[in-house]
Amino acid sequence: MLKPTKLAKNNFLSSLDLSTNEVLNILELANNLKNKKLNIELNNKVLGLIFDKSSTRTRVSFQIAMTRLGGSTIDLNPSTSQIGRGEPIKDTARVLSRYFDAIAIRTFDHSDLEEYAKWSTIPVINALTDLEHPCQALADFLTIHEEFIDFKNVILTFIGDGNNVANSLILCGALLGVEVRIACPKGYEPNSLVIKKAYEIYKNKDLLKITNDPYNAVSGANVLYTDVWSSMGEENKKAEKDKSFDGFTIDNNLVSKAEKDAIILHCLPAYRSKEITDEVFESNKNRIFEQAENRLHVQQALLSCLLY
Ligand code: CP
Ligand code: NVA
Image (cartoon, rainbow, N blue to C red):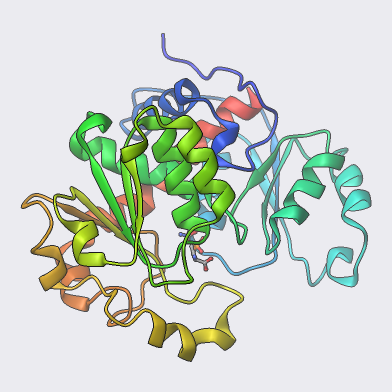
């Protein structure tokens, strides 16, 4: 019978904290949870949420996932707890480890997340940092799997900023053997260490391509994916980034260069007429909102493996 399996690593800070088999197991669990073929009980476990940045999907999907598992969450607002007044992470982490069963953290510097993990004795989950968004990548690959079943024949083209979402797609894509192409303006390429690690995993080095040409990148692609041009924390760079990303909008013209049955994904929130036109968004809304729903199912599966 399908059941959660204990993960080799205690934390989920990066897509690379999972093995290929662990990702596949989480996707299968998520699919079964989604289709109500599986029920998992965690007996009153409590997940702490520390969000230094805004969130709709990640926060709520973690809350609902814990409720469905028979557990609960406590949302620690950094500005009304001592976190916002500068209590050292190493103290916060050691105290919270005595209350919670796991903590999900959304913050800026990835090194702060690693500092929490270093001092915590409970699992720490990356709910987005400037470097990675690994929970999002799990939901994205569940959505892709629902459409194409076999990852081996899929070409995924990400058009946009090579930061957190793109970095996790690259790493999770490498684990699953999916061809990933990133099209971004010069200077916005994905993290070089992420690219290096992905090349180490891919058996076929041709499966990862970084380019500054969106038209070239979408040719033959089955999945087109985009994210906001200005991420949280980059509000003051909006004008400069809008200029740099001119020509990187997913519009009907770009979509027409991809495979006929290509699907469009977006991690959300979406900004129309920037990274995607309203027309393309609305004609692909069902799958984009399915992708958002899948956040809940993969996180429920992930939590069940981390806490079982
Ligand atoms: N995609 C995503 O992480 O959404 P939120 O910022 O709303 O959590
Ligand atoms: N790159 C975006 C993702 C939002 C889910 C950001 O960091 O704001």
